[in-house]
Image (tube, rainbow, N blue to C red):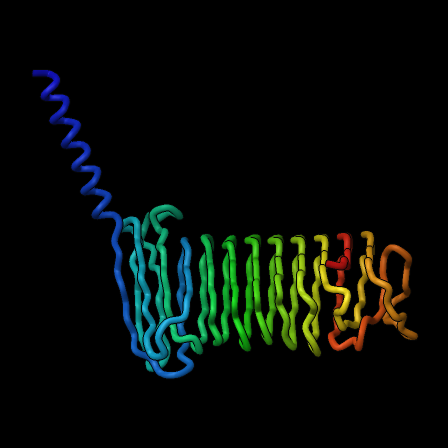
Length: 283
């Protein structure tokens, strides 16, 4: 008899737990019809946001909440779509978490904001802004667009960005650029490490700056660059033989700075750090 009562009690507990979970987790889908070059903003307090291209005139947002302490507000004004996580009183990072999946027209301008969580975006052609406190940013396969990333300490990875206008600002997060080229590529970090792997394109202006972090750029032997590298307190290493320049903006100190050109010097490259190490390496 006692065994039967225990089994019945266990079954009730399991049922109540499953029912509670079902109530707590909610999945909603929002659809918006838009015109060319729509503007889409997703404001998430906590949790991931993924972005992929969809149809030419539809924005589709899927939101998964995990408690009743957060709501999803949505609105559309003409060609602008706004989605925002609204935390209710007493919500925490765990109960306020929302998972977003977004598909938007490839030419849409998209703004993604989240304090934490994974922020992947791929294959878009419109301008992209990604902001957060401690997110993991992964942007790839973007062409002919402005890409702006601002974080405090989350890692940032950009892969296969072509003909882009790229601006990245981070306080302590590491920044990794793989095959990133364009007329303007700027990275500024207070303490994070900056790594670049590519060829610096043709005719671009590249600036990689970190106050205390290391900077490492890996380029092929046939790259066409005008390079200026300087570390005030750290070491500087260069794997290449370069043509010297007659005039420089700062004194050349062996092991701390170098200036030179390779090929036709099509792109301008500036590498700067106060106390980190700089290395220009051949790949």
